Length: 58
Image (tube, rainbow, N blue to C red):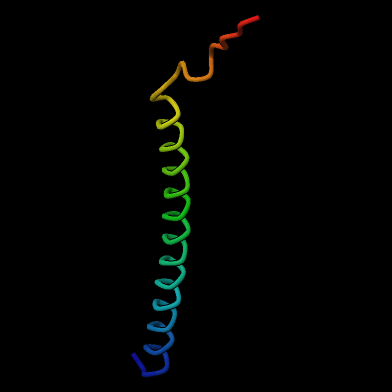
C-alpha cells in the first residue's frame, strides 16, 4: 500500500470518527432534554391533588 492511499484511508477514518462523535453528542443532548422533561412530570405527580379543590366562603 502506498503512502498516499494510507493517508487517505486514515483521514477518511478520522472524519468518520468525528461525525460519529458529533451524532453521539446530539443524541446525548436529546436524552438529557427528555430526562429533564420526565423529571418535571414526576415532580408534578408527587402532589396530585394540589389545586384540585377551591374553598369558597360567602
